[in-house]
Length: 185
Image 1: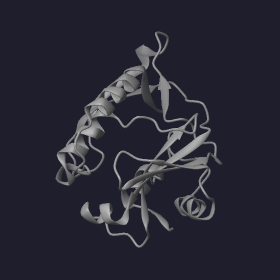
Image 2: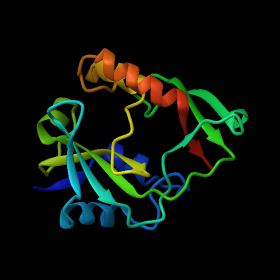
Image 3: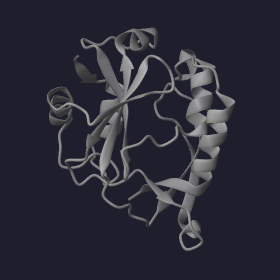
Image 4: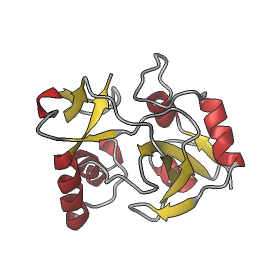
């Protein structure tokens, strides 16, 4: 099985201007090589048949993606309308400023099959393409953000995957994201 970083994941996980809330101590090429050379600790099913999650122990100083919302840090939450790319419509997002997450214990690498990526207009020369990576304290998936689920349900024209909305998964996602938020330096 071969794995490659998609252009979308490469720019989000390894931006030109490095930030402390992206993957640390590793180049995109070294990350890709590690995924191909080191077997995952576990392989989890994703939200659709074309999606798999490879769990790897974090070998870097990369910090967790999320921080719990508490009464002590709630005042540090910020929000804005943002798009992940020029092609996508901006959506409301929120994050912490002035909060630093602990070092992650695991990378949960989100993979899409070559066939699904082709449907989304992304041709790859590998069996699987990395579309994202979760940096987590435990070897488990963080629920997909509610807005990502909605975007997926809208279809590939709007930057999604075309997978219909699962109402129960959406409710679990809302429950998690009401209690947690991403952070930015």
